[in-house]
Length: 193
Image 1: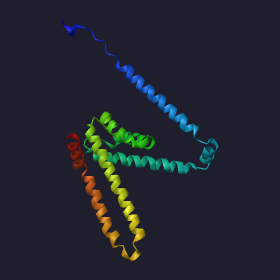
Image 2: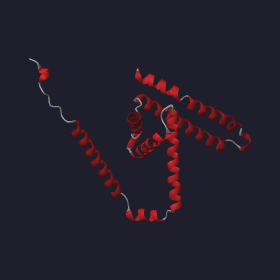
Image 3: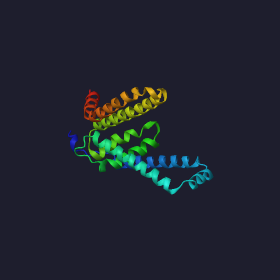
Image 4: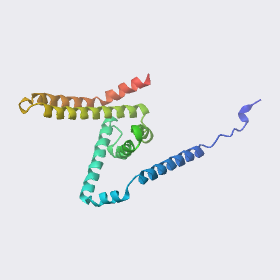
């Protein structure tokens, strides 16, 4: 018998997408209600009344600038040839929001998925740039901690360690900055095995 002419009913993909979105909406609303239920309304209102508009605007400006610099960093790490900071800015904002709100840093995966979906970059490139960015963050945090410890532990007359350490920091940061394409390719090769 010829089975190729028999019509086969395939379940609609639209139903599963709709159901998944509705489930996500229900979970989001449940989490929002739970979090709002935990707030002491009187304490929250008194805290809001104590804030000045200028401090709120300054905090908002710093937050937006921080995300702009993150978008610029991701632009450089992605190669920058056909990716603009303007395109990556909303991705950086959403990525930062999800990283801060989702548990266990699972929001980090959003960057990889958004780079794949909106920029049409391979998953390995998203993983590579994210790992490169985190390595750069680790270098900066380690450097800051080391400089802080050296300034506290070393007497004022022995700042030779700091004088030697700062150029090493600058060389390391510049090296990691320019090594991003190499890190991306190396990580892609390693994951691809």
